[in-house]
Length: 384
Image 1 (cartoon, rainbow, N blue to C red):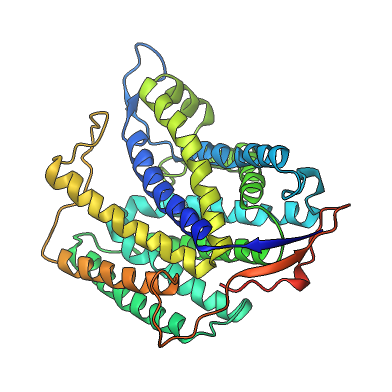
Image 2 (cartoon, rainbow, N blue to C red):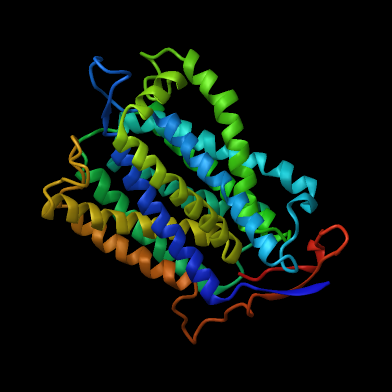
């Protein structure tokens, strides 16, 4: 059977919107449930719910639910969706790598964020942009169009301005070990993004199925790998990574607000991660990285609004103030954010200029073996 794979503007924009919305929603929900207070049982003193691994577990559960959505798609439209049982085994096995890298990213980031704070780490998070471009050009397809180089140059200028604003406006000095771990976290993020790109662009596989399989692996690795390791880590030295699953579960079930937040968080992570994979599928790793950077800039604007208009109070009367203050260096960040926003929309072809040559429409004919459900990736060269 032959079908047309048309990754048009509508689908691409929907995935990008889902990725941006999911990124912002996940960010604020995580901030909320990590600032809640709970108790192990009645009569015990309240303690702050600073348990990152239980949050990561909920994220993985949300990702794994994407399989259910894909199963519904198969039942409703079996002609255009391959049965889960006919998914190539190498795809199922390769999904372990994105899952593992996602968890390593969470571990490195959780440890480093304690020492260098969220605002300061922003200046380092743009390393993923550099890593993605280097790995993309060395190991995958090279950048062939002038509009891409021009847009990436504009983005680089914006990154420099934003990083200078964050570093100059921060009173906290960078420390060597947390800084190295932060950069390693961004490297894991970049490698994971490009592995997903290679899997999606060289195989006929749904973003929902890929997300669901990867999330299922993450649930298993958290419960039987990362949780046992985090439990035996010394609490004084690795306070941000040490966690007792039983204690975390008791704290979760003892707080109605945390339960509600997790119930909301799980479907959002399902939508978010599937949209992320869909964005990579309809653009590429660099395109998705730019979408994440734009989401970060939107989040900064929202933080300013929360701080100045809501006095740092944000839903559920949190004990911790949210938002960021406008300082003398914020103008640099505003200009930098607008600059790489311009570069991003040029790279993503939202804005086109007649002086540049653009790739042909992303429509390719894919041959699928009806008996096995396998595609022939050698016949597919996806233009992005």
